[in-house]
Image (cartoon, rainbow, N blue to C red; front, side, top):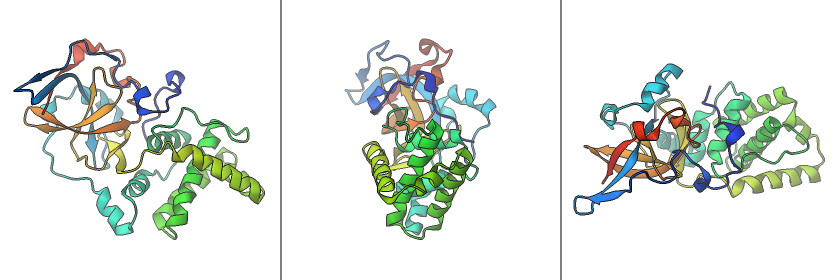
Length: 283
């Protein structure tokens, strides 16, 4: 099972990335500075997870140790994301291929919400309820509409059909949301489908990006240029998480990243940033 969504009881109505708070300190305890003839930026923060391309994830007992991982223990960068190769074989956009690659066969509401809010990392929490359905039913309906929209352009693709059937089975367990929609008259169906797509189209974070799971099993949404073993940093004063690549004793900034379950300071629960953060040199 995927890591569940961030604690929804304290999640604001976030619409844009700058509304997140992965680090509890929204201002720097010590100002960032430049060194080595202004070619190296020194900031404070720490590694909170690691980009992973294999399907092997840490068990829950290993996640705590991962948050304390020394950057020298990450290992060599010897493997690029394989999802681009799979996308080429299916002649699919990389983002869609990566979505289908992480789609679970045994779908539950927690999995679906985790996946949905990773795909739509800029969508308000929560979706407006449709037809007095539950939040879970509303999410399932929107995801089904989203996959159906892909199907219009990519006909007869087994992986996409499989994902749609998984959502439909899940919907039937929730009370038949998709079935109720299918029984509506054509005019109402078209209106509901168009409204759902309008909500999602402005919030999808997919162009040039890829989905996957971190070494600790969390879902992420980042740029396609990330590689296996890149580290995920939470930095003081930043409202985003960042992917960085070790370069000797320094790091190269690669991309922003949305990591489900780490966007609201969860990595610092019951921890003092002044005690666990350290200086990070960005070249």
